[in-house]
Length: 393
Image 1: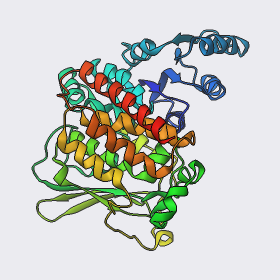
Image 2 (image 1 turned 45 degrees about the horizontal axis):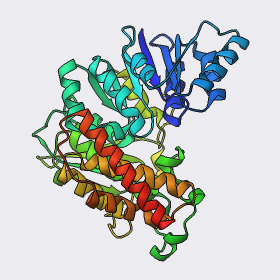
Image 3 (image 1 turned 180 degrees about the vertical axis):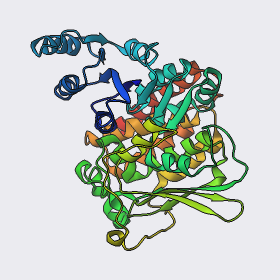
């Protein structure tokens, strides 16, 4: 029996994790759940899984939730509050596994706390790794933590790597990593029409049901850009060895090209329970609840090169990983501000890459040799991005 803490339990990854965990009550017990705003869903999860702890960031919400738990006969569940409480539950002695599913920079510190505590970290928060880079990977090695990627693409790569592979090790027998991308909702949209794209259109992903921020990232392909940076760190390869491949069917989730000419691909229906179940059961496998892949329904698989004119954010991500230091943190912070501004209808969809490029050229690059340096770059990039948004609005 393993004990799990889920950081971000009310989001899509958290919900799918609890779905898989619920299928294997003999293998996993939920110790802690954390959330931001969705008290209704968190209460439902507490009824079903009876964690020992819950965490909310806002004190008023925490007070309300304590009252809701008491009314539901669940007063024995302790409600903690604040960012420090996230670090606390992520490093509890009784916790074996931490699902890091808090979206954005907010997930960095609790995910790092889990790594420093030597937990098995299931990494769904790509921004934490993008921001802290080698600092994060060094903490994983130092603490003896196990790091398993949850993004469907990185999970697929991990499954196709050599036997007994561990994240962060360079596999000399691997020639290339082929990172697949659906292309999002605007793969065939005329470039001139992108100026008038609405938030709802950008969030209408053709294959995956995701939160609004990550859906916009998929539409701009920044999500894939962040995944390129993540792949370089997880698999210890230079960006020249990571090739993005547009694959609209989202059936092949990524591929690994070996030096002998062998190419291994991981395939499956677009269902996040598959990578979640793989990581939870690792090094074994168990049932995820996903439907078996029917190749006769798929019928054909298409592939094409990404267009950097259509997806300038992908170009910017490659530039950031090549620059290194705090530049990936700047890229990520600027993107978070730009996407939030777009979702609030303050800027046009096509302004997102302009804001990111402006920040990358304005915020001085520095060595990412401490968390303080990373967070300072993050905050400065947010300031510069917000200022630029005001000029555009």
